[in-house]
Length: 183
Image 1 (cartoon, rainbow, N blue to C red):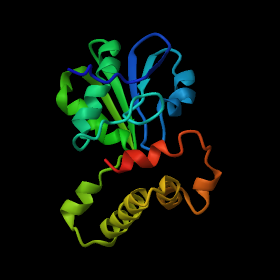
Image 2: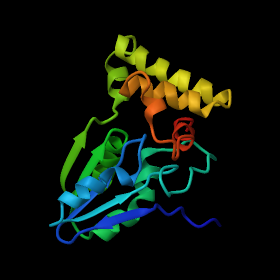
Image 3: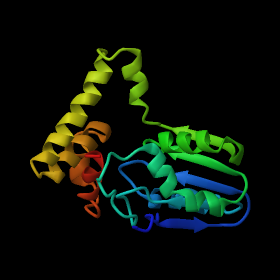
């Protein structure tokens, strides 16, 4: 039997616990400035599958939010009984899944820019925003299928951050990000 994957965990400070979950185009390093500002709190941030120093998803089945939550279980355990939970972008739905799974442990929940496209699609699958997001996804996946991870990354990042943003990005981990989208 294979040992369960372990998330890389970043930790700083002392006091009430805050667990931070990063965006898909990032890693736990996204939270360094916040960790510095929350000196009176114990701040924990883990890398999701395929991000930062955490392992890639094994791809034997589709990745779920519950899988991401399970990967971050050591962060939740290290936080102790109750903790504050923060999620950004893709980290938002992961945080919601964690709060849903153990509502009594979450003292507060903060989501910013949560990726909840399924709500748009459920409301009206034909609305322009749904078609636009689907096109970005499809273009990004098609680039991966052509073995062009940089093209995939450029399509995704330039859509969200403006033309040329991918080109200006730091190259560290540039191919890991598009690999996450294929799941």
